Image 1 (cartoon, rainbow, N blue to C red):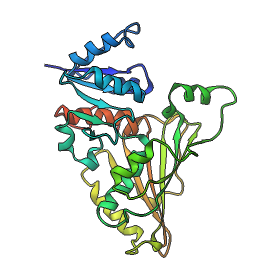
Image 2: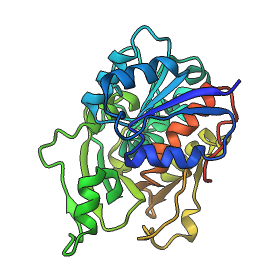
Image 3: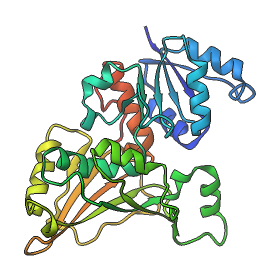
Image 4: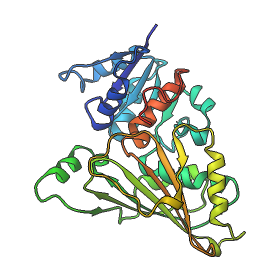
Length: 308
């Protein structure tokens, strides 16, 4: 019997990309509300209770409302919003870090944020291994395609006179910061410097490090080897060959991708390093991660339907 699946918020950017990845998949029976009913509370409640699994592609407040509407149903939930990423009772949906078994057995799964996906993929394994200190004041410099900002930002960047670069988060209160701290096991919140560029999709997340100032004097080669070993069994995350990279680019019209590539660049002598993650903010940073978690929760091969 097909798994009954409801996407609450299927008309948004993330929801549409999830639908594309599910196209032609017979394992799922999609519950669809027509446009006149997709915001109707009673219709959403009925759909949430009828589903085996629901994926929430909603703003934070609407996602919390959906969880309330689903109460008592037994429906398993994947929340693609940021509403529950550090909430008690939710399993963090980053299988490479949290473990596939935890997600397979979870009732409530919260999808990681796009920027935290890159940061955590780089830093969390190295902190766990004791190669990077948990009490270091980490900085995250990142740029993303404008699709991550929702319809309003998409319209702004696709309009005449669109900006060439948009930096933000200057209030130091970006909602991704608690997520980065919690799931990397850090003592301090990071300094997060995000920006948007005129490419529809894609993301580069960088963590610069003063290795020579750290206790234990870690070397870039050690960090690279540790990450390569940590992700050796992953079909989604891999280490890039920094020796062949002169520059990292975001293409304006890049095709969708659910993969993530990590790099460790170090200077001669080992004092400095730059950890870099390259991913699609709509892929491993959103919709691709939701499909990966959905596959795991349903006991299916985790890369089914992914673009790798």
